[in-house]
Length: 91
Image (tube, one colour):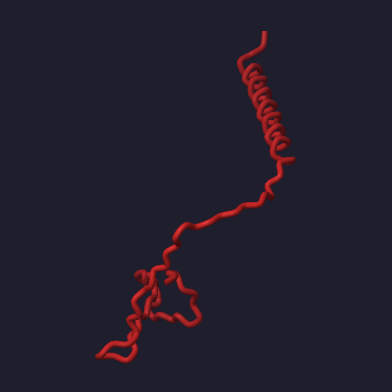
């Protein structure tokens, strides 16, 4: 008679072989499929939303906003050096 460990090893080996065969089957079923097809899209009544330009007002000739994001933890250097930094939030 086989011990419990031998039966468990047999079951594990069988499971690995079944998964290997399934993996090969999935690979072969998708390898020959053509994924380069022509796609045509259309848009009915596209709407372009215009944003209000807040640059020139009666009080200021140029209004600007400086947007930055930096977390300063305790013990870090509190000086902010932000030269040539990429923007994190796109507008």
